[in-house]
Image (tube, rainbow, N blue to C red; front, side, top):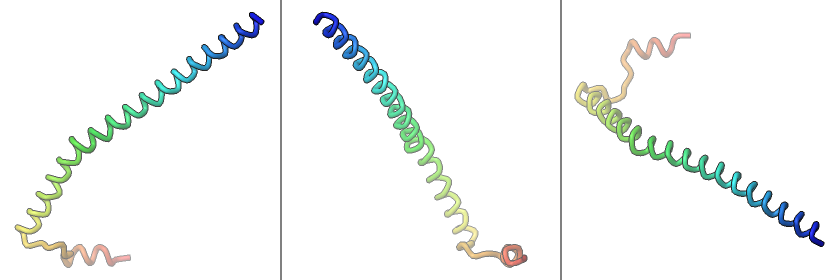
Length: 79
């Protein structure tokens, strides 16, 4: 009877340790993922948005409305 209880206690302790390890790994991966997402959202995205807006404004100021020049059209249509 004591042997069965000790075996049950050992299995319980091992399962608790295993669950703790799994949850810590999942938490670390989740934290890393959220950290990367936050960096991309709050650091990279505003810079890209400002760059995109600057390029659109520059194209508008030059009168280039997204049309291809004759040279670019020739380059694209060659085979």
